[in-house]
Image (cartoon, rainbow, N blue to C red; front, side, top):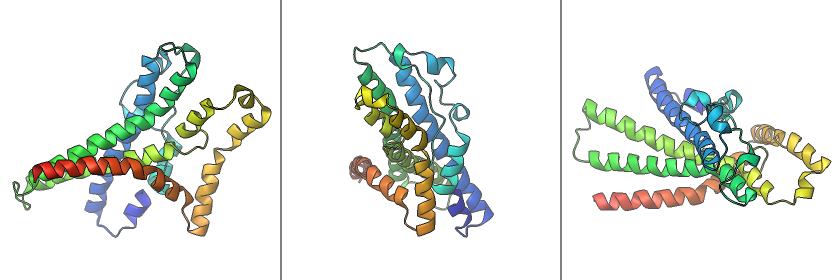
Length: 243
């Protein structure tokens, strides 16, 4: 994303402007995703995330260096994983259910954040229409806020879709893992799969770069689509209310 911005032909001021907006959207999306993992694990009885300082929206506690660099350059990435102890989850009888809840907490948080961001951006845009002089400084400032939340919606949906990919160590894989037989997960072959499968993401990225066919982007686009449709429907209803 950063590479695309630098190649856009925009001037230094425009690059700085969009860079700040992207940084806001990126840090908020990642922070909320990881915070939700920590929050749900904590609510289900495990204080490990709280003790490790992860029960916070402070982006410095959640950003992963490699994941952030990949997001800025390749358009996909991840945050620092939230560590929790499954054996300390005690809210419900089913440990499998509680583990699935923890794993799905991040993408659920991203959907909530994307929905709220879309609503905020839509409401601001509707309130400005015909009420604020497009040439005024107030219009520019308010438009920047609306754009920042619009970017947050897009980033959150991207992060949601990427994390639902069934590839270790992403959330989508861990949800499927909870449904697998215990004996299978204890085999040597399965442990080797977990160890080496994450490199598949890098392989797909290299293949996409070499062939010009972005396999990851296509997968993320299709996973993202139903969530985006729901948000667009809600924002469309809000626009109709204002008109």
